[in-house]
Each structure stands twice: as C-alpha cells, then as structure tokens.
Amino acid sequence: MKKFYLFLLASLLNPLSAFAAADAPIIVCYPGGPVNAKDANAAMGSMLRVVERVGQWPAGSLNSIFTAKADECRTLMDDNNPKFVITSLGIFLEQRDKHHLVPLVQPTIKGRTSEQYRVVTQQGKYGSITDLKGKTLGGTVLDEPDFIGKIVFAGKYKPDTYFQLQPTNQAIRALRSLDKGELDAVMLNEQQYNGLASLNLKAPVEAVFTSEEIPLMGMVADSKLSTTEERTRLGNALAGMCADAEGKKLCELFGVDTFAVVEPSQYDAMVKLWKKGK
Amino acid sequence: MSNQHLLTILALSLVTSTFLNGCATLNKDHVQFSQLSDCPKFTVEKLTAEQAKLGPMTDTHTLACALDFLRNSKDPTLKRSALGSRLALNLAERETDQDSREKLAGEGVGLAEAALAAGGEGDGAVHYFLAANLGLAVRDHPTLALDNLKRLEQEMKKAMELTPDLDSGGPSRLLGTLYSKAPAWPDGIGDRDKGVELLAQAVNKFPNHPLNHLFYAEALLAADDNGAAEKAKAQFSIGEKLLAQGNWGYSKPSWEKEFADLRDEIGDIPSNTSQSAVANNKK
Image 1 (cartoon, chains in turn green, yellow):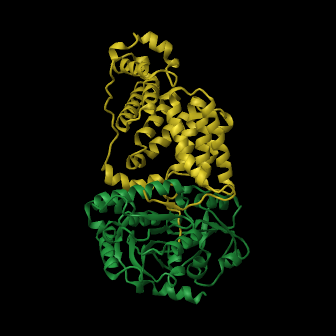
Image 2 (cartoon, rainbow over the protein chains, first blue to last red):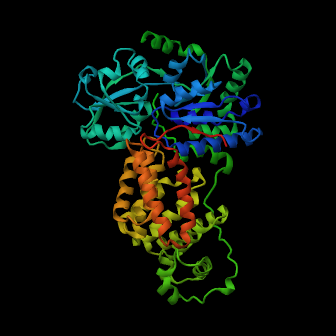
C-alpha cells in the first residue's frame, strides 16, 4: 500500500495552500511504478481540486508534478526547487544534501513503520544470494540501484555489477518470468512478498535474502526553502488526518493506520548506511 | 523504494470519489423519455422480430420507445433476452448528461440482472451488456468501480466464454481494458500483460473495429514495454482512420471523444522512447 499512501499524502496539501499558492509545485515521485501518466495526471489534478474545495482554498492554487521515473524525479527537483516532496527513501537519501531534505511525516502500515525487502528464487534452485552472482535479478524495485545496493543490501552487493538487472514496472511479470525459469531471482518489497500466495505460481519460491528493517518514507521538506511554521503546520495536519472523519476513510482505503510527524533522527541509520556506501 | 502499488486512475480517484460522492450506489432510476406518444407501434412479436435492427444506427427516439415498451412488457422471452440491457447501453452511450447516462446504464444493469433471473444465464449477450452497462455506470465513481471490479471481471469472463465474437470481440475488448486499468497485483485484479494479450486478440480477430485498436493502444501504453509508444501510436492511427471512414452511426460521437482523450497523451510521447511518466496536475 505504500504507493497509495503516498498519493494520500499528496491529496492533503490544503494547509499548505494558504501560504504556498505561488510556490513551486510539490514533486511526487514513484520510481518504478506501473503508472499511466494520463491517469496519474487526471487523478492528481482531481484530488488537488477536491482538496482545494474542502479546504476552501482558491481552485487551482495547489500544484504538483508527478513522475514514476527516478531520473525524471531528479530533474524535476532540480528544475523546480520544491519545498515539499513526496518521495521514496532512495531519492530522499540521494537528494538529501543537495536539496536540504528533512523527513516530515511517516506512515504506519499494519502496525509497522518499516518494511523488509527480499530476493526470491525458485525453491531449491539457489541456496543463497552468493549463488546468484552474475545471474538475472528482476523486479519493480530496481529503478534505484544505489538504494538497493547501499540500503537493502547494506553495501554488501552492488546490484548493477553483481547481478544482471532486469527492472520491470510489473511485479507479476517478473514473477511469471521467475516461474518459467526466464529469471533467476526477483526482488520484492514487503507487500509483494506477502501477496505471493495469491499468485498460484507453478514453482514454489523461497527467499534467499531478507533485508534488515527499512523505515517507510512519506513526505520530506527542503529545510531551507520551507519555514519551520510551514513544516509544522503541514506535518500536524497530516498527523491528524487518520483521526478526521473523512481522513479516516482514506486511511482505511489505503491501508494506513496513521501518519505521524517523524523525528529526522529515525532515518539516521539509513543516512549513515547511505554515506558508508559511497 | 518499491512501487508496485498501483497508481491507476481507479486507485487515485478513489480519494476524489470518496470526497465528492460519499458512498455512492448504482443509480437505477428510470430516465423519463419525452414524446412517447409519437412512438412507433411496438408489439412483442414486432420487437422480437426486429430487435437485431435496434442499435447504433437507430435514432434515439426509436430506441427510447423500444426501451419504454420493454419497461412495461411482461413477456418472458423479451425479459430473458439481452435486448433491454442493449437498448439501455445504446442510449447511455449517446447521452451527454452524466446523470442520465448513469441512470440508463444502471437500468441496463437491472434489466440484465432480471434477464439472468428469468433464465438468461446461458446467453453471453446478457452477461456482456450487464458488464458494459456496469462499466459505464461506475466509470466516474471509482469507489463504486472498485467495489464492482470482481463482478465486472466475472461477467466479462462469462461473456467471453459464451459469446466471444459478440460486438466484434466486445468481451475481449472489455476484459482486456479492465485488466489494463484496474489496480494490479498485489493490490487488485489488474494485469497489464493479460490486458495487452486480450486486446491483441480482439484486434487480430476483429481488425475493423476502431475501439479494438484504441483500447489496444491504451493497453500498450499502460504496459510501457520497449517500443510501446510506437506500437500504440500505430494502433491509434489505424483506429482513428477506421472511425473516420466507417459508418458507426450514433456511436461515432462518443467514440470520437474516446479517441480525443487519448490523442493528447499519444501526441506527447516521444516516438523513439518509452512513455514519459511525468504528469503535471495543474488545472
């Protein structure tokens, strides 16, 4: 549900519009996602228009730009210098220094504020991840190889040289390829891994690698471009959302228990790991 | 970060729908037609005999008259048939007012359900028009759409099984489009590859139907494989040409709108790259 909650965040920007009408757009990045730009565009626009109506802000005062590609996300951030970004952990870590990013809000999903990534293979085919050296690795999470290498693999393996990477925007396609033996391994996030049982794959799969717990990422802010007041106001609004009557429905729909203002220090371990990987 | 979590319009508009529409339900209220006193004299026998002629080429007044006749008929054969649901769909497709369109489509769902209850289970057309009406009724209400995804899939599958060639590959066209647009695994039933496969089948078997090409183009874009943009553009052009050159009766305006909706997106795609995923939502 991670992608869903990120959009949920994107729809809750009304507190911002009072002071941000003329500001740079909010950049919304979902690297690797199977997204139709037209659909995303229409839906984001619709959501923001609703948010404006609900928040009684002038129509069209909120603006955001969406991308499902990591490269485009970087360009958009450089070109627009946004105050707020809804992004992946990988993009946050990579752009943190350049854009003075600080985490603002973090979701809790099924009681957890973190997730684990796994590398799965056909059962019994490979004993461990070291057996996969030089083999094909597919998945939707490979659009950010630095994140995979430095954070998911904690610097132990550099994905683009250790494996033959075969990124896709469809997890189900990667798993079908694995099932047919066309791929040696697939990297899955928590939700994908938990959904495996519903796929009825012919060949059973097993995880040959499980990452450490990795914190979920929500919204981040440029600490130089945004004011403390803006960050506090937006952060508090988001944190109260799941307790709100309408917000509660949204949270339930997206499988989010709650959003909480997050202490940037909760990502310190990730920042450290990222820097260590350089 | 992983991004398997779907961002289709269904998923996204869920939020919009929740705010805008609350917990919407299917509207099955009847649209009241005017000038029914001018209707042709229908009888059960006449309508039964001429039902195949009532379709996209028929003027709206005659379709409305036929539907009104059906509303008041208790004839079991007509009730069991797909005719009422098909008439409602034809009227709904050409209706420009959203409320009336959804009422007509909702009525079409109700008529198909009544046909099934009256013994029409083995008629693929009943399942097909049920699904088509249901799709039309919920398309602007994503919460409702999400609630009905499984049912849409089941009815379309049934139609494919019983009458795959109906409406120039209509069952494949609808099911393929559903798989292309619905939230994908692990969030939902959506499956881009299956969508492309079904729509390719529809195009190959019924290459003269513009919507087969249009929806295939959309599915190709959704799958976003290498070369998808080129293929999608080619399919779009074929469909557009077929639409312009053929006689599609009263269906033409609504189909032209469908093409226009995709034309902007197709036009923005660089011809030698995959689909750009950047979207600016500024009004």
